[in-house]
Image (spheres, rainbow over the protein chains, first blue to last red):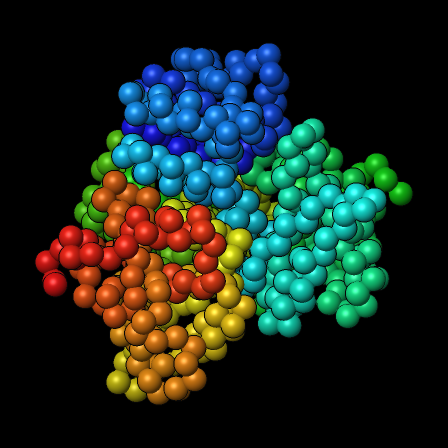
Length: 266
Length: 266
């Protein structure tokens, strides 16, 4: 049996009772490296907080393990109970869907333990989840590679009055995490080049950092305003605000940008 | 302090360790009635499974309490630690956003404990959350009231190749829960009347019942096929499939409609 267990967004206490029960009965426990390195302050030399809670060793599965050495996890799961731990919810990333497909093809039973992910916890900013369009992912631009396919998606969402959740595309080697400031910088560069007025410096947005953690930071303001906010450590995400309803506006007001929110920069 | 705690989708074991810790330190615990009546088999005469786990009484907050008697919850939260429990994630419904706004206006601190909701757990069917458009809610039709504003939203999502999550609109008095069969019946009636070919009987869909529970049921097939499937007890939701990618198709194949899936109805 393969248990794919969502750990939620904050720290080790965000696992569910059902998830903890599954982990405790498993013979082998793997954890996805990319986001867990951050969310749980896990370094390659120690997973001790989780291991203490679970009462057993946890093996860090780097990207190579998940996508290329999935066989190792699946072989173990064919013989005994194995848990694969994922920050957020198991179906936040295509990688994990692929693992489920491979397990099912091998006749291995799969049980999923759900948890919060950015895809629903972003509701914390007050914008209704019903009113989001397609989610976009923003890759790190390089000197020669500046793909802008997210631009048309944002444009379409905005034409429909919908909010757009912007996530940084995962970059594994070395792991890098898109900041809100970089995301806005790249968004404005693309608008400057395309010039189709999908959005501009005065477009209302919400920046969310470390969503679901004790020290989460949520600030609403224009792109220009958010560019000067120090959001601190990753993970970050950005919402481009569409048409708003009164209760949404009231929530955004609580998070409105001010000098007070703007720790450390300016 | 007001803790708004998501309970997740299955049963009492889907609370997180953080959520349970919050509930245990609260002086008063309220629970939202609408969905909890189902998910936790709670009847008006007993909340005993939860009360046993929490070690304290739980007060069932009917709709009147949440929207009209929110003052009672807020007055208690101004004086001591109060937990308000919500099935799924706290920001799945506008009602709860409204409670947060009212608390903040009164200067009451609010802490949210996130959990899985249908908005992210629907990823279980294999369709990537990134590729969903606006979510639609489908109300129960009556003889004289047959609103169809969901039609245009579905049409727009499909034109963009996006999947559409269809949820039944909450109906409180008496509580009723939209079945997948009724949703499809109403969808096809509206298509018949509008005739704009947003979808038809052969459009691929996925029906999901009791998502996140031990006995969840997921079946993919055309609208016509799913109409004859007995999905059993609520809650149900329906996804109208947009453009698919190979890994999405492989997952849908695992859930494909067959006579075997079709318990009891043919």
